[in-house]
Length: 360
Ligand SMILES: Nc1ncnc2c1ncn2[C@@H]1O[C@H](COP(=O)(O)OP(=O)(O)OP(=O)(O)O)[C@@H](O)[C@H]1O
Ligand SMILES: [Mg+2]
Image 1 (tube, helix red, strand yellow):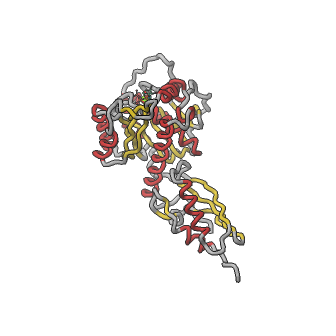
Image 2 (cartoon, rainbow, N blue to C red):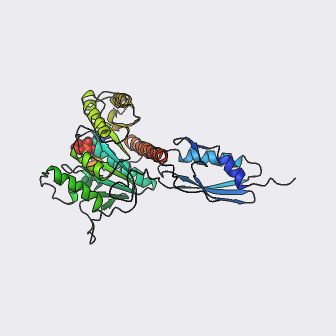
Image 3 (cartoon, rainbow, N blue to C red):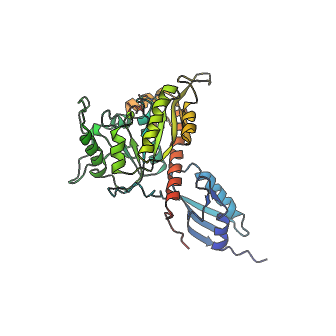
């Protein structure tokens, strides 16, 4: 019997039955297949994801493999996983920065864990292989340098400041430019120009994601930021209890007024895991989900209280690096992946231009 001839068409046809779960389209329609080659009974191709932090990476790979292996005559399938983060078309913004997607983390209330989420999400995305920047827009109480364990910037170039770098993340903070105990008194226009300069006068290079840590409150920093760099979306961090929710609602309203899509709500310090494995709700329960429901936005995830999170923040060793399998780190990584997926969905929906073209 003659062996079935495998054609590119038949392989692509099989792959067009495999869905990207988040984008809800098939891999071929999304132009996610590249380098397709057929050698006898062996098929090889690359799957180009829209983020290296794709939460469905292995599921997509497995389904693609099974689909192609099911074709008559195929003996082996070699898949290379790659990624190309799409540009949402907003973040290029007024300054023409090579930043593909910018996401701001806000809360309304202080001390709920915005900076902690910003730092760990940034590091998680960098660990997945993305090019990530972290902008400390909290110019009154900059915490990013301490939390990332860096005190100074590298020497500047002739034209621009060079961002500091740790754990694969480039970062900029007013904390690098002033002495630690120097009080920071800003007037509106100064704040505005500081944030603008952090975007225009810093050599960020190409970034897939810029994570922005906003100060508490619903104020000027967010406004300055959105005037300089249109954001792909915002994330609201809250504690589970009611008083935190009231402030978080204002945070959500702020994004709406600034025309920034709200990606969703993260609940921090959700519970404490006791030595016997049971969970204790220190700050109440369910607040984050309630807020998300009210606002009609997704609930992204909850992070338990863990001393390691606080210690990691103080020592400049993010928990996601120090104890990657701890429940808090697992939760933070899940949040990073969910946010990356939301960015991809938003970018793909916004642009009919798809990041790469198929090689046929
Ligand atoms: N899940 C957690 N478990 C234990 N400690 C945490 C957790 N999340 C945050 N913390 C600690 O709580 C403190 C406040 O967190 P963080 O600085 O991230 O909040 P913030 O919202 O950025 O505050 P601010 O409004 O002052 O900028 C920090 O010391 C941090 O290490
Ligand atoms: Mg903070």
